[in-house]
Image (cartoon, rainbow, N blue to C red; front, side):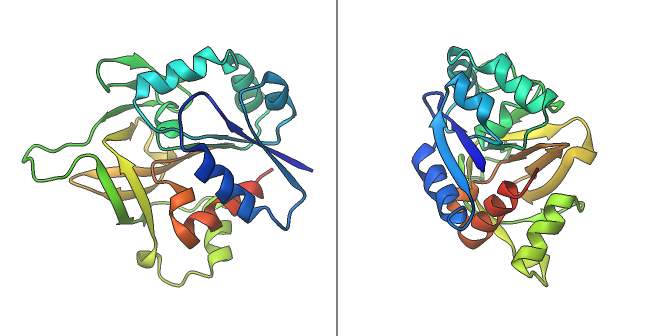
Length: 218
């Protein structure tokens, strides 16, 4: 039995994420919880941290749940599969620079800074579909692409809504990028931790295949 926990900390696109996870788990022995309960966190097998909004407010919302230390135990010590989506990925950084300078969870070294728009020719927030560029193969992406039976990686795209970019310190943890005025980090990966700047729950067939692949992680 898989217990998938979608962390509810007062923000995030919870309904859409829940519906997408439910759809891809229909043929699996899987229970889905939307909760910030420490008990639900302890019995979870897979953890999803969605995020919509500002870096600081999302992080404060997570801290207010009082689940942060247990979350770190489940993810960093017990190595349960973890997926952070959008701001849920950005919070994994060392620091965020939205409306000030704030400490992140520091699970993956890097800083979250506003998308470079020096010529003021970009619409911010970046909103819409963008082609993905796969920088490296991981066990996750190998399984994902096999599931999708992809022959041309240039055909893959995902849906983005964001104004800030996760700038990795360690480039080997950057797996997928896209381009919007600059190189945008689209997916990061470190051991059992995955983060996506794009929204899998809004990315149609690719996004559903992505979530299904995540649920298959152990």
